[in-house]
Every structure is written in structure tokens, then in C-alpha cells.
Image (cartoon, rainbow, N blue to C red; front, side, top):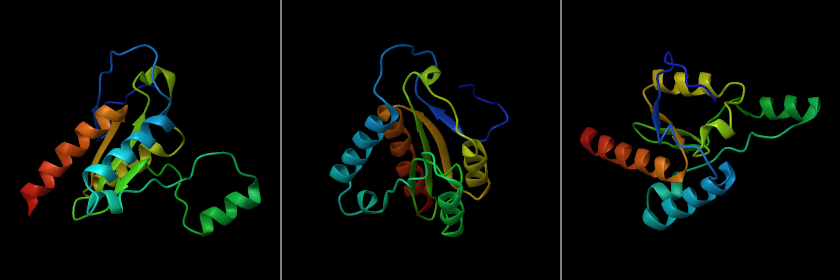
Length: 140
């Protein structure tokens, strides 16, 4: 995966890390378990992962788009006055890539005023969340 300097989003995590690391799915599960445990009455309730991955036949794709599926929607979205939009990737980013539409989604979210980032693993996503929490506390 290559990071384009023209993109408007922050990258959390160690870009130099190479090696064995959990899958993106395992990292997402860990993140959502952690946020629901740490913030059970706030962010843990509203944090969401929009399932739009996977292959679909033409009819299913057409129906999903008509129902509001958005190509490239990020892995972690927390709505708010300043929304949190995070695309999670594996800790070793050379073991993954951006899917079609993901960079466009991130850049459009940034332009709309969201806190936008790519996180390389669950610890990086948690660091980004903590920065976002501090940022929105400053906005109040």
C-alpha cells in the first residue's frame, strides 16, 4: 500500500513496521470490543462498521447501492459534531491495500469536516480515537 501525500488524512501507526500481525478483521473486532468496554454509554453505542466489503453479483450490487451502500466507506465511523472516520489497515501496511473508493471517501469526509485517519492496527486506531476525543472536548 502506498500513501499518497496529496491525501488529506492522518496516518497513525508505524509505517516502518514489517512482520507478522493480525488480520484487519481481528484488529477491528478488538477495537470495537475495547470501545464498547471503555465507553459503554457513549462512543461504544454509536461506533459503527459499515459492511460493504466482499464480492456481490450485479443484482446484489445494484440493490445495495440503491439502499445507500457507499463504495469505500471507512471501517470505523463515529457520528458527532466532528465525526470520527477511520480506515483500519494491518499493522504491516505492505500486507494490505486500499480498496477502490476508500481514499476518495476519506478525502471527502475530511472536506466535510470530519476527523479522518488511517490506522495501522488496533493500537494506532486507539491512539487516533484518543486524539479525536481530546479534539472534540476542545470544541465543546
